[in-house]
Length: 434
Image (cartoon, rainbow, N blue to C red; front, top):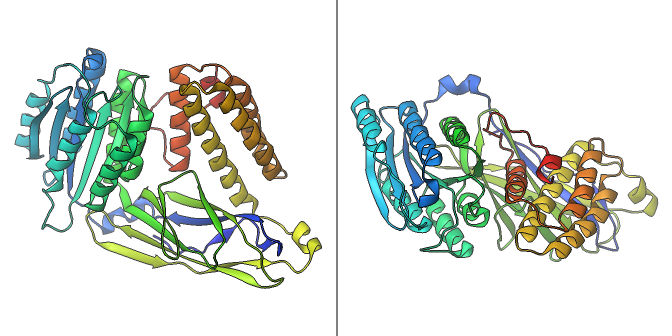
């Protein structure tokens, strides 16, 4: 991971207070051309597959086929566990080394998965996590990953998203990471999203059976090419009275001296961006607010590393004219606009799902007034504005569940800077809202 300085969209602030500025910490990783210099860490992978009645037929067949494909891609030093659940939880096999013989056995056992009854998602996921949690203990250089595939709302076990988030975060701290795949239109994005975002992973969407295979194989490819995981950014605030909000709503907590944001992982050759919205206090003209930050992360299967970033400052302007005429970083401002818009889209889709149609439209209208003002003069933002204008009108009535799921997926991919693994997917908000 390369050293990077903190950046601001604008560097001057009003001495009278209440200036809003955006702070960015960006991370990039070396490309795959350097892969030969390091070996991939052995992986302990658990697939947790929903076999409830709604998965009967093509969805469950596609999940079996995807699991077989995963087994074939793993190496002899990797292990695979498969847990299936409906209202009961069964472990098909646990910690099976992916040797030639192990793959043959896994293939035979996967063929026996059949659909069942209700959806006890939490028990299945926790059992999957436990199958890998103990495998790497006492052995350096291994990594543990759970991939959960479900097409429904949990209706047994732990149902509260806040409790699921706590368990997922605790497992992440133990080095067990969670990624989720939501299948079809019936899954709960609230439940699966908190598992993945607090578990250091991502919620993917697979609408059709073939997409289950595409998404799972794409996610496996990313896992095999992860450069850093469990990325945390600590931003140290220079003064009391600075209000901080994470654009993109990544998991964020207060610390004694600032905030800590969890960014998940970064793949070889990719970039990640953390953007914070700062509302600044009063100050003396020509004095400054000095910000520091650090990146804490793990190499897959390795120990924790820390990068201290070069500090950066916001200066209280000495004149109204200088404040008004200051230039801004348009490249950073475009990233702010994209993440800001994704926040609005995700919130609006959730409110629409809850039947809060007027409230959702009012929220979009309020955000749009501030958003349009911020976007003035930034190339590439006109489409973002027009999409929010359409959204303001469209959320006044019920959206299709497919549309809401795709809107949520659109926002997830943008805030985690992740690619879409579905081959025939087109990230077009206009089509999701029609």
